[in-house]
Image (cartoon, rainbow, N blue to C red):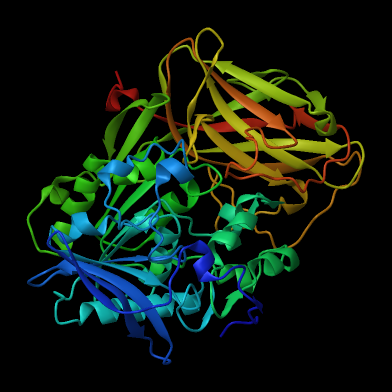
Length: 550
């Protein structure tokens, strides 16, 4: 039983404000596809939600569900709403819901695509909660409904990006009987650590924006903004929004990216690593997420997976390596390589030690460098590689820090690649940016206490159960998780570590990305290194003999 009560509020807007229309069942034929609009589905407690179903005109089909709060009718033109997302709208049917499979394509290949308006969203009854155990139970009920329809073959699959992936993690925990396969394509699995508070620092833009996208209703919605304001530490409420990944047993084709730093990268890779599925595959790319989900080659990969597990066909999936990952060289340049596991087998975790302005192979003598984040100052540490080096996986930063004034500090970390001429090499970032980092990390120093049971040397996990403030001049050790990445550095190229007190990558509003504007920096801050404080960046280095991206 939950040890908290949900806080609800009136909807942020009416469904019609976002193009919704009151439910009215319709049966429409679209170029050989049957479109059933506003099909009512009664949940076990009597609440009615509405779904749209696209399926072949004749015969049995395999259900494929997209579950999210954006509106089953919410067909978007990415080129208008997200101008730099690179999704080719002309390759999608006009019935493609946001971040969901194209229903016309899939219906023509023997599937029934079901887009749902969950409880309390749009015109569905009940009160909305988001990524909650209760929502997962509703999703499981819809899976059982889909698996028992007269037109269904009884094998249900799940697909979709972002929320449509996060909701897959939650319902797959329950292992509903008719669930046969899942395709989580980039979605967080730990709401607190991966979205709400990066390293304990509150995210103040993207998370605050989401209720406006999720909050269209004719009933009541969970008051996420109020809960976030009042629940600053990790408690039972936030634990209820964290996927219990080890319970998942269904076959899974998981897609992650190196590019969704501060959103989906960590949670998707943790999803693959921790699920208990005996049949699971991981694909990691370095591209823009929406564009890549709808890329024809990727759609065919998705279909090879679902054709095998939902339609019983012999497909290429049985010959796939357990892991495929893109080893990036720069923006949209790299090669896909195979591996047996995640993290990559035989990874060699190599430390580079901080010295003023440098990252060295061995620790040096004692030194202290300082910066004033309130004046926009930052620190950089460079390491030039003497030979080709492939860095794939989690990096971890160990520091000793202190403040001159105040009782806390916010640390923002970026890892960058510089070419032999010293120019920063850009990478795709979020869904729309083209000048992003190799990887990012964050820490609010009062949140430095680790969850010892969950942490590893290469992946420190913060407990977030209490705050431990600083006294001026007090030197404390801290461990900073840097989200996973996969990048090749050639001989003569540099890895740069950047440390500062605010977002290192920022873009003008209203562009949508992670921002951190509620900071605790008060004055000069110090990083201590060398001697008995061997500050270091731990690198996951793999054998370059795996393959060349050239």
